[in-house]
Amino acid sequence: MARTLVFEYEGSIAGDLMLMIQDGWAQREAADLAHGTQAELGWALDPALGGKGLATEAVRELIRIAFDELGLRRVTAGAFADNERSTRVMERVGMRREAYNIKESFHRDLGWLDGIEYALLAEEWRTRA
Ligand SMILES: CC(C)(COP(=O)(O)OP(=O)(O)OC[C@H]1O[C@@H](n2cnc3c(N)ncnc32)[C@H](O)[C@@H]1OP(=O)(O)O)[C@@H](O)C(=O)NCCC(=O)NCCS
Image 1 (cartoon, rainbow, N blue to C red):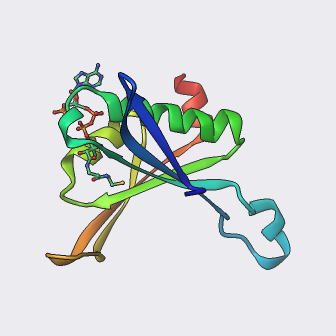
Image 2: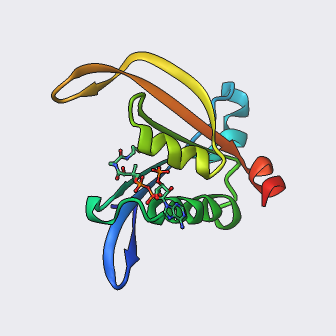
């Protein structure tokens, strides 16, 4: 739960967000400089509340928290490659597709599926804001 936030709509919980702080890759002698500088984000919305822009608004706020309040330098997010709704959320908030990974994510019913990864840097977000 330390990585989980919830967001509300009209007084009830509408969905949840994940913010998992991670280290950037670095050589051992430079590891301190990369420690805790980035985060993986995730989100899920009550299906009854889909199609109103609530997840997009929540993810925008999550990114603001990551960059403005926590001072992180990079955020990433991943999804199954066929997750079109989540892909549209990532693109609406200005994230960039950086990877398409073949059969890297396991789905309980469908087996190994392709995955996509998106990212955004603090300086890109500030420039656009
Ligand atoms: C991913 C997920 C959150 C997307 O839900 P969503 O309802 O499509 O997203 P939003 O709440 O941001 O709504 C966006 C939709 O509302 C529409 N919309 C209506 N009013 C809007 C507004 N004021 N602002 C923005 N979008 C608006 C948008 O056009 C968009 O529809 P479209 O994608 O058909 O163009 C949802 O499908 C989900 O919870 N999936 C399961 C969990 C999951 O897959 N998580 C991702 C892995 S990390």
